[in-house]
Image (tube, rainbow, N blue to C red; front, side, top):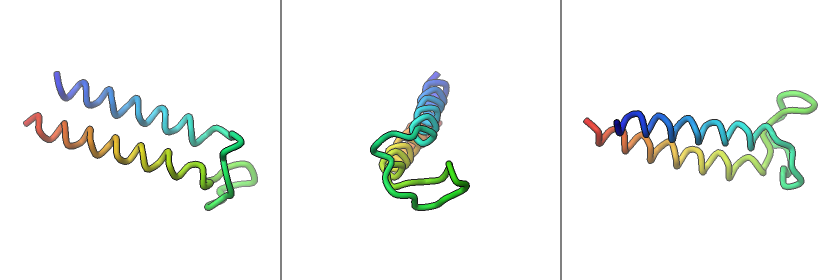
Length: 67
């Protein structure tokens, strides 16, 4: 059961991260890595990626304790 909950948390975090990175808000900031004229990674994406990475780490540690 714990493994399914961890999978659910990881899926939710990844979905939110993709939505936040795909959006273009006023807080987007300067481009860091440009993929095309309209797409790339900007300074506003950094906090999103850090929070996602911390969530994935926490979920991975929870999953590891399940065994």
